[in-house]
Image 1: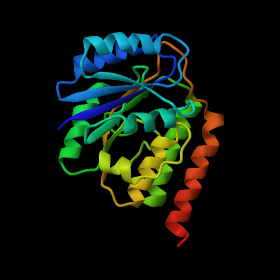
Image 2: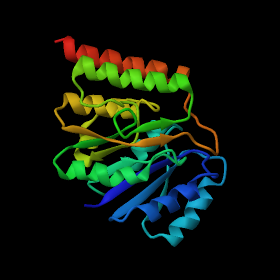
Image 3: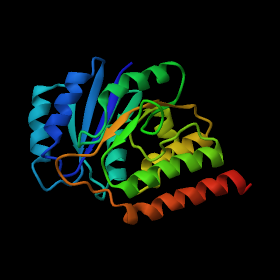
Length: 232
């Protein structure tokens, strides 16, 4: 079962080589890596180009749409070929050893397998405290309100069958895309599972995640889900 790993990269010159080499060292399975250069102004594209010449399964594509995490992911989805897709962050925060556990859930018949920092065996190491509180709250509240079998809704580290991605009309403009796909997949009847994962705050480079700036997008999704569930 082949995987497409989508790596959105905005000014990740300090991390991208380590990320790609770690992927190749860690994954003992058939896979391709699609790195989406999201309008970087540093050497990200050049570094990926050199590695793609070394590793035949690494490809660089450009986000031709407006800059942003959601558009970068959508570009990666469109330019990948495997039946199973998984976004991987370009800053080494995701624990790649979780991927085989996710794949086992897919093989069991689930449509989405999510990495969760908030179940037994998972952890969130570092990062802004407010961001951690909000991500934990959103997962718990959506679980109890809508019965979604997931404790870590905002985490982008999720594995999807391609049919899930193709069935969702994605409206998100930024990091809320991961929550949007899961909510719409849930209401469409897709089977969702989660496995523990350990997330670590980046040690190099600068994050583009800004809680207050992104909050309206998440609140809009809450409103959509409430209407979908209770609006008739």
